[in-house]
Length: 111
Length: 117
Image 1: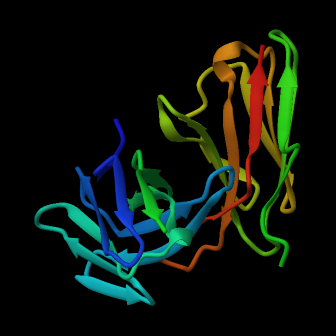
Image 2: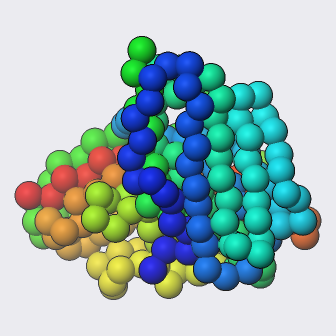
């Protein structure tokens, strides 16, 4: 089974609203990463948070990590139509050398 | 930097035919990954290389799948013979190791959409 699971599976909001997506995982990790995938394209890396970090910001993105609950959240503030995409979390386990992706959250931002 | 380049972008073939997917990673990256994406199974890691050497091929579905990396700038994923259930989008990704932190961000190509009829 996948290491990371995103919630919700789909999210539809109006432009200007905030979007929050969650990721839960099962085993201890080194890092957790978030990626965006536009339709018909490859995944694009957004942000990496290490296991000893609790929060990280990048522009309109805010990522939190709670290792005690084995969960992470991605917040996109002041969403734009261009944020419409699928968002994936990827977990990197210690000594695994590879990232394992969840099933993704499909975000639709209506103009 | 041109990014990770995959070819072809689309491939349509008949069951039983051999299919070869190609990938050129970002220059200087020492890790290369092959992923497969389907609606049913999501994004699955098939195999990854470090310095051209296969490290983990446990995700390769069966012997019909093989991957090679003859040099640092080229990799192939071959399916022989192909079957309709192989229809998916195949992604290649590369990354640069960072010493102890080898789980660096992945840089993906735009994928090859394979349809096997």
